[in-house]
Image 1 (spheres, one colour):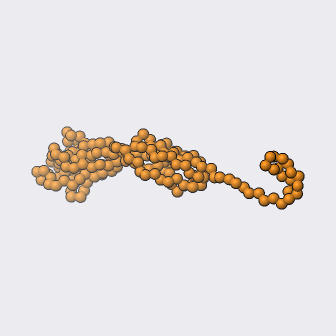
Image 2 (cartoon, rainbow, N blue to C red):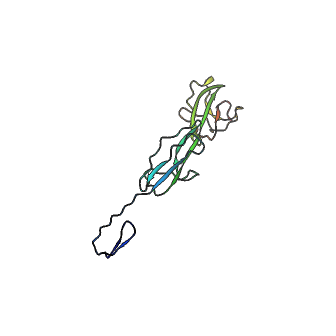
Image 3 (cartoon, one colour):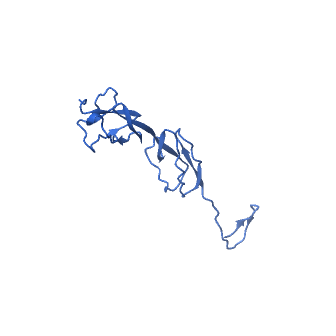
Amino acid sequence: VSGYTDANAKWINESASLTLYAQYSAKNFKVTFNINGHGTAPEPQTIEYGNTATQPEKPTADGYSFVGWYKDVTCTEKYVFSTPITGDITLYAKWLNVLNIIWMVDGKQNGSTTCVEGATITPPDVSPIPCGDAIAGWTDAENGEYVYGTSTLYAGEKPSIEVTENKTFYAVFADYAD
């Protein structure tokens, strides 16, 4: 080295060996959690470049089931918490509605099912069956219009019903089925 600048920015013209030490600090990034209108959002996390965020406790909200954290606002790309953080990121909560399904047999409630929107469910076991009739299927119309199933349901045979809203289903007996 033929010279250097001292602490006062004055050039010193001198030949000498010089050891330089680099000083740096890693950049920190913010991980923000958008709760999408339900429950309470976890606190944002400050994460050093290359490290991973900590998965927060599962949030709760009445009437909803938390599915997970997603990278996009439409909740199609699930976030993997082992992914190194390389920039600020917002994670979005995905929720499904919790549905209540009621099963009616011969004018009386024969149980209920709690599930999430879009679930496929099967009716509960019915015993004893009123008047010894066989259940031919289930309908969501109180007037007995036969909607689900096409024949008498024998022991263990039940229709699969996809539900997207709260519903009451009514047993349709073999004597009354279309």
